[in-house]
Length: 545
Ligand SMILES: CC(=O)SCCNC(=O)CCNC(=O)[C@H](O)C(C)(C)COP(=O)(O)OP(=O)(O)OC[C@H]1O[C@@H](n2cnc3c(N)ncnc32)[C@H](O)[C@@H]1OP(=O)(O)O
Ligand SMILES: CC(=O)C(=O)O
Image (cartoon, protein in one colour):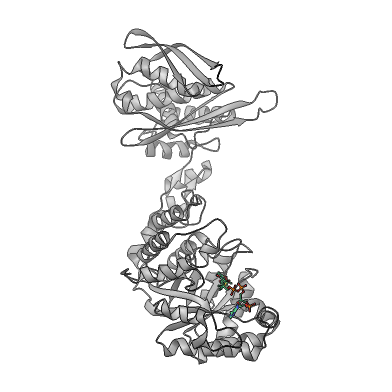
């Protein structure tokens, strides 16, 4: 795969990627950054090479004031720090407005001023008139310029305001630019725009004013990324976005999708070439800091962004991965994955086998029987999508069967198990399991307690096997997920258990399905151990059906 590897010299100041995760992103419900978090976010954003990092609103929140004080010690390679704030209030002067002074005191070399550009907001929210609103903008920009700051103007509600009263909207922009603002940023504050109309407006504003125009899109129509890209195509040279689209209400334009599109679709080197393969890693790291699970389906950087489930896709991918991928995932530091489920065909299994180290090329019988078996099992509730280790065992069994080879005996064999629950006088519930297994030509019986039936079963099995299979001591049960699947017509509900195991070097997942949760767990547990046995060179065959 080699499509759309970015090239070209960085665009420098002629195009701005402006990140506002720490200001607008922090307005997302549920996100609270500490000052240390903010510094960590800023460092990561600098690593991906954004030109501007809006760090917050100094003076409005003590944390943001402290962030700017501490950020002075940082040595950003690419980004300039930006302080965000409002213009002076109506009826005062810029140099006497404490909020404006706080912007200066932040020490940030760049200030973004937010100003109302919709006459209805000026009259009803600011309770002033257009002349005074323009004076507030002009005075504040001029004052900050005089104090040596670079100024961008965020024209709030620009698109709604321009549709309602274009003259007022343009007067506000003009007041800012004539006073020395570098960029007039057109904000879709309510996020209600659609791409064609928005791009028309951006083009019209540039044609009428000749100003340098930026774009800031909220995602209330689900079009923030499309709107941002359309604005750039219409002539905007400054794009504001947030990491993973965090932001107020439905969020903002996602930095990773916007940059991904500009770099790979429009060929614009808006961040350094070396940073493009870092996008996926940084997106996930920023999700961790925000304490939000990464969106697996996020464009470009989500772990499912290049995951293929459909058999038809896999059959074309086998010929050339680019037939079903819009870019080479490696360009943005992501990976392609083939998922094996009931939708798989022979090509899916061949590709997945390659990934798992099971060579199925030239094995038509094994492929056919594997596809049949996967479909049959999935119809009964099994799911191999997240259980690569069980799938690998299934494929190896089918290969051995197709080659008419003797399937290796499993490292141990179950004679029986029993689990009981003991509800004591004090209300404590203890599970106790007894297993009878055959291992290394011996019959072993072991009993153990646990805080639940599966825990007890796992403990009893380990006690029975450990003296004979010393590698077992490395295996940990790291996660356990249970799902009850409703029965289909004429069948009872079944339980699907996914067991994630780990040792000192890897993690692997196995699946078990049965009408009884303990038996489903047992099957998944056994596959986990058999898989480990295979890795340490023990004979293998799945205990699953
Ligand atoms: C579209 C956006 O997302 S812009 C970013 C918004 N972010 C935030 O609001 C987060 C931080 N905000 C805060 O901490 C507080 O709201 C503060 C410190 C800024 C202001 O707090 P308060 O002084 O208590 O005022 P309050 O929040 O109630 O109202 C905002 C005031 O700013 C005025 N205002 C709103 N926009 C502007 C503007 N662009 N320029 C000047 N004044 C403005 C309002 O008219 C209102 O004035 P009033 O107090 O005379 O009615
Ligand atoms: C400035 C800003 O965040 C907005 O208008 O949405």
